[in-house]
Amino acid sequence: MLTVDENTLLTHVVGDAPMGQLMRQHWIPICLIEELPDRDGTPILIEVLGERLVAFRDTNGRVGLLDELCPHRKASLLYGRNEDCGLRCLYHGWKFDADGQCTEMPSEPDSSALAAKVKQPAYPTREWGAFVWAWLGAVEDMPEFQPPAFAPTADTQVSVTKIRIPANWAQIMEGQIDSSHSSSLHSSDMVPARVEGAAADNKAWYRPSTDKSPRLHVERTSYGFHYAAIRHPIKQAATHDYLRITEYIAPFTCLIPPNSSYNVTTVVVPIDNENSMFNFIAWGGTDCPSTEDWRKFNYSQPGIDLDEHWVSKRQPANRFGQDRQAMKLGNFTGVPGIPNQDIIMWVSMGAIVNRSTDRLGASDMAVVEFRKLMVDAATKVARGEAAIGTTPDTPPHRIIRSYEGVHSKETDWRTLTRDSDAA
Image (cartoon, rainbow, N blue to C red; front, side, top):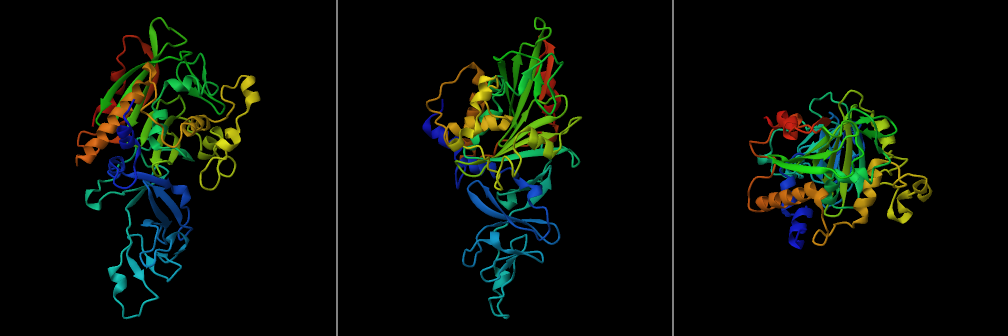
């Protein structure tokens, strides 16, 4: 359990909140590249860490990211004209380039020098791995952008399911690092089978174990922590263990153990204290699904399962579309799609879960580690110390990998991640 103050420290990200300041010391994935397909196209609203920003792709293809409200009379730039390498406010025609510099003021006299003195807050951006990334911290502290773990190279196949969730980032992240829940909540989609290791097709994921009660071993790293969930395998149970090693890369990323076809990652970006953007990612491997197929598999297709704002049509008001008859016939949750099953749990907790009264067990060891780690990390930032994952001993994210496999009981799971610990 956490105290009320510790829970606030963990969950609050808006304004001067230490956790939000911690996150501003990292490059943040603010939207998908597909959301800005056209030069001089429609600007989009970006909500992140309690901020409202406007992103646009200019005439030269560069992505600009500006504060939403025009500095003149505070009308929204979201509705502005995107033209000739700038975003023009509709109210009086003031125009801003991707660096935030005001380049035109048609409402002012030709002799005015005001335009050169006006600059809208703007944020550096990079495009990589299906996302547009932004630096929201102090520009003088901006590090070089490095490839994320799920897109180690520019040509890595990355397919993303994106869903807006009315829940705090921390309870979503706790779901990503909780291996034991998959044996219950996702039992109709993560099916025990006599396979050599985790496998996948367009119907389900398959695991070589029926064990619902994993033993957990946790170890901190410079970038967060990793842990092994150790289960009895279906084959050779007397001499072997089934190991699933999850990597938490603070603050946004969790590398879920892969299957034989592709890797799986989640990225959770806080919109504010009570809402988050959840990105569920398939990448790399030998047979990574296309973005369209990945969204079909997860029942999260825009226009079908999600609205134009990435909000699921499955809501508490319609009981998340749960099919109770399907449950009677054997489906565990009555809801199709792995992320949809998780979302019911996260949303049902309330916008910010009260961690001062929850009861934890042995299977929650990784959740406990996450809470301790990030409360401590936020406390350090509040004292003026560097954010977790930004110190010189942090390895490049592109070399960090999750893992799964069946090994002899004598195997030390840490040896299976040793390459990931090397810089």
